[in-house]
Length: 374
Ligand SMILES: Cc1ncc(COP(=O)(O)O)c(C=O)c1O
Figure 1 (cartoon, rainbow, N blue to C red):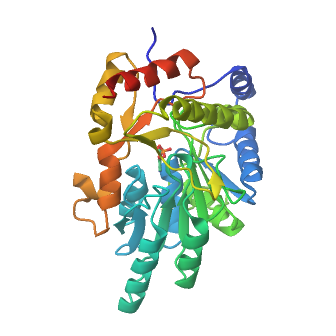
Figure 2 (figure 1 turned 180 degrees about the vertical axis):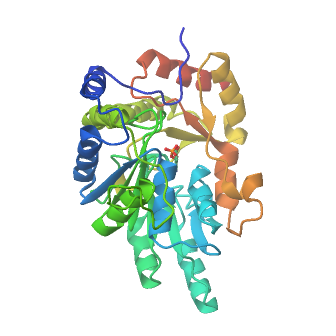
Figure 3 (figure 1 turned 180 degrees about the horizontal axis):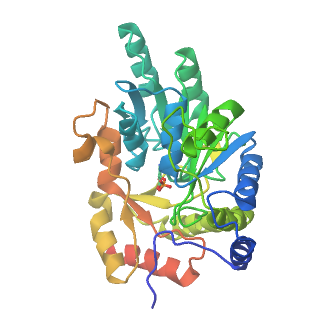
């Protein structure tokens, strides 16, 4: 039997056709018609005027922070429960991440803690230069509350929607909420270009400046003239072609991941000690990964017992993100709370959630979990 991966790529004939079209056109460069078209397609999908295709979600976050004005010595509020890239980009620009705990009802950054922290910092005259929100596992953060607070204190929001393409919050697309939004097309995401990312914004001037910085800050003259330090961050035309094909199937992929989530919920509903990541009433996640919480007291085994039992069957699952305040690399970063995300990490497990997952494999996962219950 072949290994069941957590979130493997799901590519087909359309992606192959577009990739070969790019290849045959000889636009084998980090620019070309598929890059332009992929940017237009994503901008239209998110309903923003500007999009910039980049080499990774991390590159997009890096540029976003520079463009909202984060400078050396600045603090940036970051959720502690996320992939490390969200905080690393703060370090890249010489800033300091301040790690904020999760809301237990959504697992995303706690809007009440953000409000308290901004108010306390306003009194001290030390507001952060930005707040990064993360749409965790494909579920949006609570933007009504977060944006109201950040607007009140005039702090820009960067939306890390790396995991959330296609998700919505009150019918608006993930990625469209901050001064800038970021997507990842890494191999494990809901759509992939093998590696890649996109920066989106309502502010076309911000996208234009990001475009300039992403191409080594080259001035528009014939010779190579540079007034600023730039980066080599543009997405290849070959990969953009794959991305276009993937985007055409996004709704279908979301539907299939939702069906995976529903299958797990149905099968495990009566198992004591197993709970699911809550789905907030304010939106529709893209169900990138289905995550459970395991209470060893009532279930009879730990999440690690489940992970090992699945691994023995060659089925990949993974603990939920280890909070950044528990990561050695950010041990010295200031933290705002942290007990909620630490407890989610102790109990949390991401189940295999790929859009091509066979029903028999879903059953093997739920049967294995059921067999460990007391
Ligand atoms: C929340 C989050 N932010 C940022 C990234 C970074 O994206 P990339 O791997 O494309 O650099 C990822 C995933 O990889 C992520 O899950």
